Image (cartoon, rainbow, N blue to C red; front, side):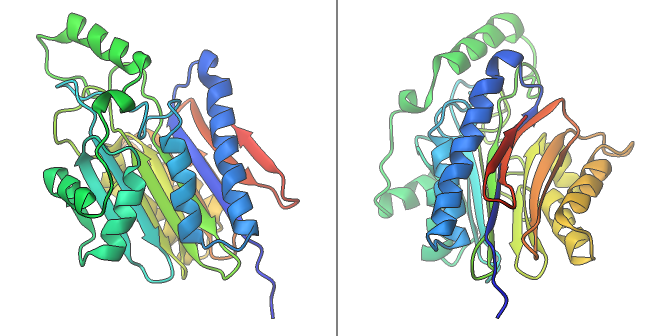
Length: 303
């Protein structure tokens, strides 16, 4: 019987990361990859692994997910998340939820405890209460960096429509794992774009856009400007390319080429694992924080 070696790749967002933030981003994705690798080595499933890895990054204020997320134009934090199991093609997602510290775990409960794939807003928050997930004060998710950024935006642009792409965009987080049984799973979580309109939902919680996993194809998690990523169904595109014979690296590169085409002119990045467990990543922004496991079991973390 062929021995299956697990693999893992994580990202912490694709954008123009200022040099002062490089160290925190590299360390953040490194810690996430370390946790994921330990879980996979101990026999954890790909699905359990991506949930726990994304939870760790949601708790890290370095990233735009969970604690540390951007404020919307009304001054509130609204969160989106998606998780998908490549063995069954089951998925769960939540969008525009408030006061939930770890939306990725709520997304998994949508998958396992409802007949649905996506819950949004108040309905998702009511479901969280039913599942025993406590609401946290919004202040618990808000950090000084984001409050200051939002206050500055209000001072300088309060008479203008929300500039959803303006200012520094800290990163969406995601993970793709391949376990000892050959199962693939993907997860993505985000606070969305800064100053977005209330109720705006980007690519992250949408199956095939922000994430996708299929044992027969591979798995992927995306980051960037969601309105562009949705146009090419980014992660399903990557997985279909892998299913067509490209390895994870070539598929990621081709999908990013399409994202940046003259027709789309999108910005972002993607991580992937193919059905052989090979990892790949690509982006067309100045930076993307990512970490993955090398063949010798060591972790490569970079921007």
